[in-house]
Image 1 (cartoon, one colour):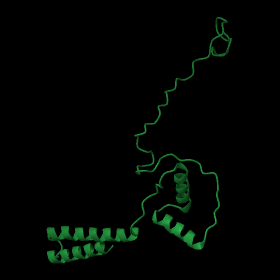
Image 2 (cartoon, rainbow, N blue to C red):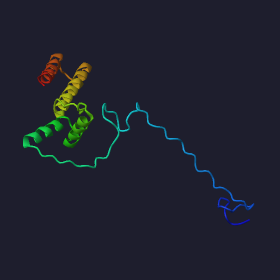
Image 3 (cartoon, rainbow, N blue to C red):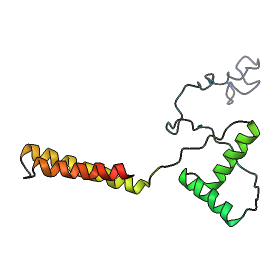
Image 4 (cartoon, rainbow, N blue to C red):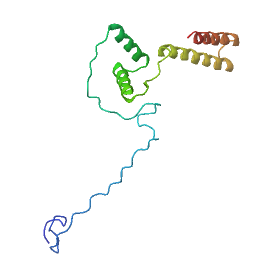
Amino acid sequence: MPLTTKWIKGASPTGVAVPPPPLAVRRPVLPKKDDAMPSRGYRKGISDTKEPVDRFIRSRMTTAEHAAVQAEATSRSITVSKLVRNLVRAHLEGRRLEAPHERGHDAALIRELARCGNNLNQLAKQANVGAVPVSETELRAALNAIIAVIADL
């Protein structure tokens, strides 16, 4: 018997050419469903597809116009480039601009109010157990102060 393998063309014990083995069978790739959740987490109205941005457009504007565009982008928590790109895309498609909603209040202020509410909740739980000598009127006064701050926003 020769020292070659049987898969080499023409190297079989009978002298007849042996065909190569079939390629590995691949599973068919199924298209993604439109209703599937995005792979990077779910945010309503935001697409999961990334497209390359390889072109650059320059624009000249006054200082006031630039400040207004910068403020608009900052209030919506996106970059100026993304805001302008969305605006141009909406104009070319003949539809309204779909940009993230403006952020109403400063995130740091909202976090601080959440911390105050959390502390008040912990105090109330400890007062109900009897571990902290805090009266109900003091807790209600603190709650009303927090509600007043929220109402002023």
